[in-house]
Length: 310
Image 1 (cartoon, one colour):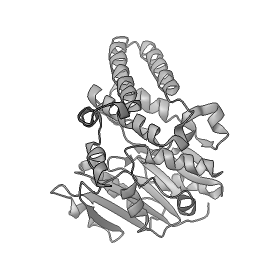
Image 2 (tube, helix red, strand yellow; image 1 turned 45 degrees about the vertical axis):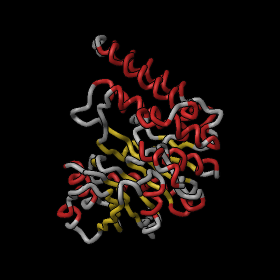
Image 3 (cartoon, one colour; image 1 turned 60 degrees about the vertical axis):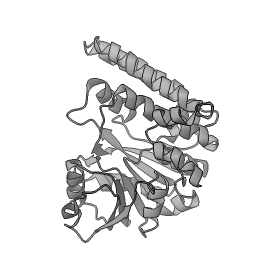
Image 4 (tube, one colour; image 1 turned 90 degrees about the vertical axis):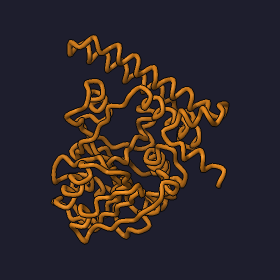
C-alpha cells in the first residue's frame, strides 16, 4: 500500500466521553495521521484538555447558526492539504488501531474516490437497532460504481460520514459537499463521484462502534429529513426508490426476531417502522406543509429558519 497523507475532520457539539476515546484512539493509529481538524459548534463548555494533548489537533469554533452538514465540512476540508480527507462524527469510536490503515488501503485503486467504514453496535444498543447495523453494514466488503445502481438501487450511493474517507482530487472535481444540506451530504458526494466514473468502497475491516436507540419521534424526524434531502437533489435520487430498501429491512428484521425467539419485539418493529414511513411521507410532501409543521417534523429546524437569510 502506497503511503498517502491523511487529515481527519470531526464536527462536534457538546461531545461526551466517546469523543475523548475517539481522539485517544486516533492518535494511536498505526497509520500516520497528519492533522485532526475539530469543528466545535459553540455551546458553552468544551473539552480543550482532551484535544490539547497533541499538536496534530486544531480547533475551529463556529456558532449554531453557522453549522451546516455540507458547508461546515467543506470549510474544514479547505484547511487540509492531505491527499485523503477522513470525515468522522464525535460518537464514532474506532474498534482498533488499524481503522485508518484499512480505510485508506482501497485508494491504491486509482478509480476509488471514497471509502466508508463498518458500524458496529454499542453495548447498550437494542435488539432491533443491533440487527439494523448488521443489515446496513455486513461483514463482507464491496466496491460500487454506476453499474451497481441497477442491482443495488439507492444502496449503491450509500456512504456515511460517521466514518468515511475521500480522495481530495476527486472530492474537488465533484464540487465538494453540497453547500446547504439538511442530510445525506455523504451519499450525495458518493453519487456525484460514481456519476463521474469513480468508485465507492465499503470496507468492512475498518470498524467503528456507533449506534443509536432512536425513539419513534426521532425516527420520524430523521426520515423526514432524509426524504427532504432526496427531493432537493433530483440529480442523484430521481427515479431511484428508497422505499424498497426500507421494506426489505423491515421484512429481514421480522424474520430475525422470530428466529431469535423474540416475537414480542415485532410490535415495536411495526410501530417504529410506521413512524419512519410517516416521516418519509411527510418529507416527500414538505412543500405542501405549513412551516410550523415542518419545524416540528425536522431534526434540523435551523435549516428552515435560515432559508429567508439566503
